Length: 299
Image (tube, helix red, strand yellow):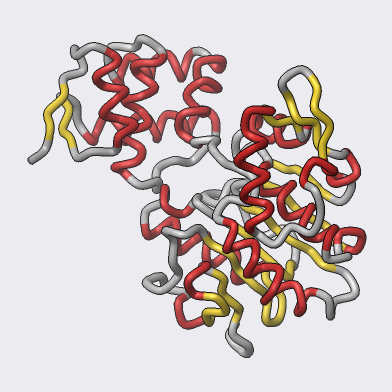
């Protein structure tokens, strides 16, 4: 049974429901959400109109509590008239959450099944779409360095959230997260001490700047922007789960267009290409780890 929550409820109650992801109803309308996303698009050119409605609703409700805003129309007014408020709301809508070597078996599969193919290229281009705050970017850079490929690789790390991109460029992560990152790294087939890649200072882990030498951080929206380079590997993990089917298909189209002959696509654990319009254009390389390969001869 759905749980009905009033916007007059205590903020903590709404936030708890929003974060839990339980089915619920609120005393507002889908039309208000559509008006909010349309206003954001018209004012700031950020397109959330084809994001998953359920996820979008949870995030907007959470934003209401964090900004002490009584209603979606009031939030819309504040967003339109105050760019600072929009930047705050953007943090909730884009969900900047990540970790290094997330799902270690995925990175182990990259090492064992994708890297041998990448070795055959004189130069390698990788696109990490929806790179968030950079944890996955540095994970891949470490993996490529250990496999002797980083110096001839160029990694495009893109996201729509400027605050996330700025954090990613810094390569500084909370020291409290390093224990979990280290365990992930070890399980992913890491070849040396993880501590060799960072310096600890003031409760932060500062990663080796040389890891970012071949990384280009850039703003890019899967909802509105086009392909910018041919690549051999595309990673877009735990991003598509927040899109509706229409936007997922658009993203798969961009990835297919970007990938060169027999290029590789890596998705998140809960994501699949199977039911998209591009299902027949890719074949599974490591299905359990959501790694696919572009089929030859398909435009």
